[in-house]
Image 1 (cartoon, rainbow, N blue to C red):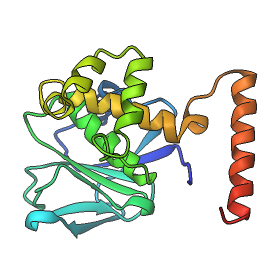
Image 2 (cartoon, one colour; image 1 turned 180 degrees about the vertical axis):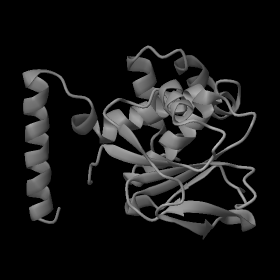
Image 3 (tube, rainbow, N blue to C red; image 1 turned 90 degrees about the vertical axis):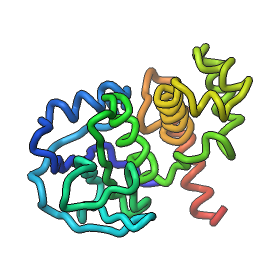
Length: 204
């Protein structure tokens, strides 16, 4: 998996400052290994059709995410966000009633998709691993999610649970790229990359 840690933000909402966008990122707790820079609006931009007859802006350049008001008349936001996956482009809309952490989590969700990580699989293929992560980290979400994961995920804890899930995914899939610390960890990551390179060379 290609790891690029610098994302360009194109902010199409002239009523929202770049500082506010950074506040959304901070509220969601997106790890500092991901860095963000800003680019002028409508540079490297096209539009893409979405489900339910929508049409949203999408950047042309890779490793770029658009932030747009969902009520912008130039577009038709029928989804909260969209990613082109391995083309490393993403876009998110925001509504007036959205909280800071909610918008930040939406950005994080699409960014994770751009690394080909299963950001939609909390209740399926990633459920068991996520539960174990909640348990070992002493998360306040553990008991509620284990008792009834669907009801808990749809309740008042929805956004904060998603944020915990995205952090779990970052640790699982991007551990050596994003969370470094000490010689032992550096050695572990070096061995992990060496094994990965061998497996790739052997076609495994």
